[in-house]
View (cartoon, helix red, strand yellow):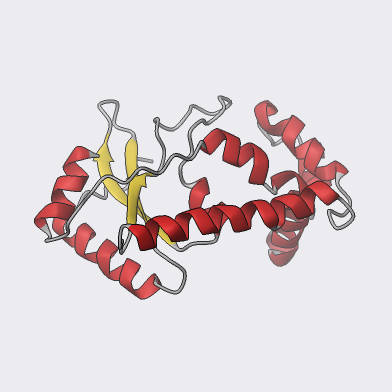
Length: 195
């Protein structure tokens, strides 16, 4: 991350560390809509594949035996939700809590006159299949609805990719894409996965 920040500075950006204290794990616990919307999105996606889909809905996916055991419980919880619309917890997560997060982020952007927030996409390396992934900073953009883009920041000693995320205020996508493009042209750190 330090090398990535150095590149950003060398491209002419002024960088400063801002005091944003957001507990990502707590935010995920309070704002995630996965249990409420997961079944709907899985079903829509699988149906969009038409005849090419090996299964037609989440229920069939769970029953197929082709799902890693570590995510079976989550998928079963998602399958149990028939509609989130009558659940007050869903509405709390959807509006008031997310509105508060957007207010905090907007204040930070305005207070420090930022074009973008820059942070590691994840605070720790990607977890192995079956292990829980912790400290996923990338959820910040999903929960706030603010535009963000992730670019390569290099690789860990073990060869795992590390991502740098840039986030901007709403409707600043063009500026965000220009910044990401300039960064990627200066680094060329993307490396295709070995298959």
